[in-house]
Amino acid sequence: MRKLTQGVYSVGAIDWDRRLFDELIPLPEGTSYNAYLVKGSERTALLDSVDPAKSSVLVDNLLRAGADTIDYVVAHHAEQDHSGAIADVLLLYPDAKVVTNPKCRAMLIDLLHIDEEKFVTVEDDATLSLGDKTLRFLYTPWVHWPETFCTYVQEDRILFSCDFFGSHLAASSLFVEDEAAVHRAAKRYYAEIMMPFRTSIRKNLEKIKSLEIDMIAPSHGPVYSRPSFIVRAYEDWVSDKLTNEVVLAYVSMHDSTRHMIEHFVAALIERGIGVRQFNLTVTDIGELAMSLVDAATVVLGSPTVLGGSHPRAAYAAILANALRPKTRFVSIIGSYGWGGRMVEQLTGLMPNIKAEVIEPVMAKGNPKEQDLAAVDNLAETILQKHRELKITD
Ligand code: FEO
Image (cartoon, rainbow, N blue to C red; front, top):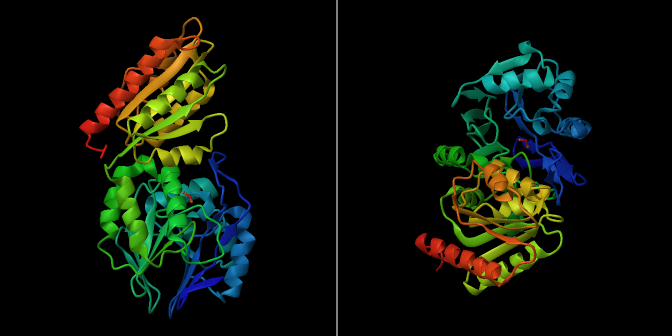
């Protein structure tokens, strides 16, 4: 239990050991499930709960914070890492009401089977008085589910943003200490969770910019006592700004594709284009996702396996398609023994990426001189495309 300001406490849990989220997302630095207790002069609210695995930590912290009663449990988001311990809180505080919006209410009933009678629903911009503290609810849909919203405590000028602005970072400090480290963790989190909803996030950023905010308290990672730092970072990530970079995700079985990839990387570097190369047999997909936030071009490299792409390259294509990066150009470098439809398969797996497909380079067997010349030509085409976007300076 830690204090943000008078009457506002962090009562969630740090999960130092968790290494995978959604059975998909690597957590190299663990995470936290932040819940906050807001004690007004007349009523008390708990903002979110924690992952069910950490329910006992939340309960201990509530008792330590002297929460004799809880009148409201505000559920900003139905995903279970924040809502999963609400049932345990309701057992401990049976008179508490769950305050949420109608969409989240329906999801909480579906996911957690919470009794319908327990809910109070609130509209966008509604307020709820705790006495000397006022909760103002602001709908912020699609950060990153449709029901998500934030709470602004008017008197303390704190925005409780749930997943919005979060970072998967287990840390003993309540507030951000090392902005560079948190920037990296938050960018990774944005890439993995938020990037597909860039347009909605832009609108939500505009909405919160009308508030006077002294602190942003997210539901993962440390609290921002200098909120402009993370708001500006988000503005940058959701903007249309691109970097003069190629993200190159590849796999190779007998070095034919690898030979071309190495030639391609050298050709890009010679032309002053940044490269982020990922070997898909060992890569951390969170790092790959982060690299997609602002790179202008994505190139996949794959051998042909049983007539199609290597499954790891297909996985990267599916992942990129789901994350919907703002990349403007896509291409493929690959090899084959006797035929196949690898190019059609990979491009067909990325319908959500509204990018121009630059002519792929496919070599039969070990690449020959003309194949490497085609790789050079691909690098040159990318340079020209980046110049047209005026991102090469
Ligand atoms: Fe941290 Fe979308 O849950």
